[in-house]
Length: 265
Ligand code: SAM
Image (cartoon, rainbow, N blue to C red):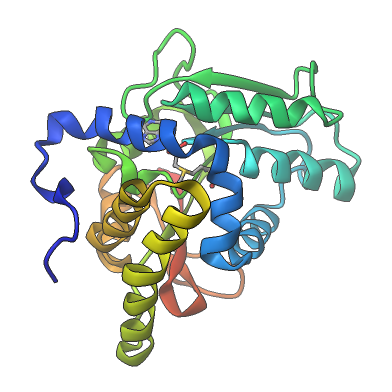
């Protein structure tokens, strides 16, 4: 399928500033648009993703949520640890390349009990090159990245950094749009994403192009087995981390999204 928008021809070195622009322009409408585009389903996926990781079950954890945006995953991690295990020591460093997204997250956390506590920090940084002074080797028990890695110029570098900052025995977990496996369902989904999402972007956020970019970035991201292989190549063991299953990933809604996990070996 040909592109509806010229981003595919953008040189790799410009992609980073382009992505920055996209998220600058969608930051304030981001949460609303997420709900509209996915009809609220992204909330269920995120709930499912975080509860599968059981933060707090084995005591307080040090977590990093990369491409953390407005803090959706961080908030769930902290709530899960507190509500299920009365854990108020688990902490999350939310890292994002875009200060506007982080500002929205900070505003949102102001209304929560985690504001002004050591449980959360918002830090600007590039997933592909986390500054070593701020993010030393072997620091975190849990590394999460949700709907973020496909926006990065080099997913391989993101995985390399994830491996570096995780402690031995830590967990890497990625929630990302993926490939629908059933062809009929795939056609319906294509139709929806290529026509409805940019219209929603125009109506709700006044920004068709940014949402068009989001749709195209989903199309270009590698399918599940290929991405699992990339995680392995970065040094992670990928099998047996999905409840009741031996595989390397879990499909959500027929592959619209997928959760990949790994442990550094
Ligand atoms: N994780 C959040 C969520 O699930 O709601 C936000 C996801 S949002 C679709 C993608 C985020 O990735 C944006 O906030 C964007 O700024 C961030 N991002 C893109 N490239 C990045 C990079 N190289 N390093 C860190 N963050 C990046």
